[in-house]
Image (cartoon, rainbow, N blue to C red; front, side):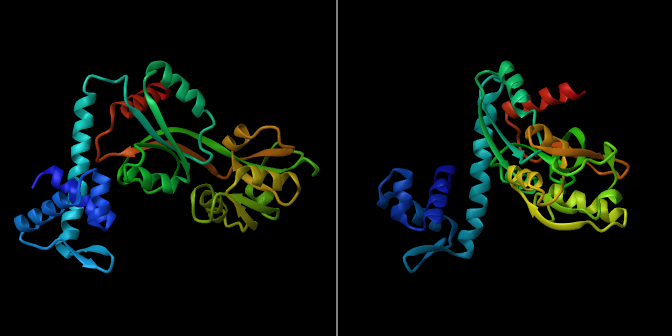
Length: 293
């Protein structure tokens, strides 16, 4: 059994029909059926069974499918690595970005483009926890996320730490001081960014809990422009990382740094420590490491 047959079997499983798999592979149906029979004869086990309109994997088929995915992925990684030996100027940078982690990403990518003008890009934006899953599944190689998260399977390059700000509508009288504590604002109606249990939302509630304070939480909103509109209209106040203020200037709000409570957030670049990192991704990591060292 060779890598070509494994690719045939993956197509059969994922399409559920020999005819559909043959179309996907740009080949006729009889030779594909013969290849399936040849694999079953070599392994001494039935790999698929017909269930209604679609083929279903047997237990033996499930085992083969798992290893077939791993082996074809390793083959692709091997080919990619061999192609890229001694070639750091070509390739594709695939990177995930947390919804509001990095306001300077365009500047970072401009600097990288100056060094490697032939590299192309695939950029995805999502919550930090989902970005970890995308990196683990090799959908993207790198991700810039907010910490803390469970990162046992990842290498991490810490980029920076930033404070949080308490924001209110400019229609409200301003506080006398430019900084506030969590105790000062716990009674204010708050709508928090992100989603309960994730990222920034968790960090904020954890800080209140650590200081035995109970915030007056009335809601959450993961859409940052809408969140700022709600604050502007006096619907509620909010607590946001400094990056949000830099990325969304011009809103009629008052902003007060929250100090003395250990409420800050770290931003880091992660990649899967158990997989080969493409030359483009490695060059990106090296550039950022040099800039922060």
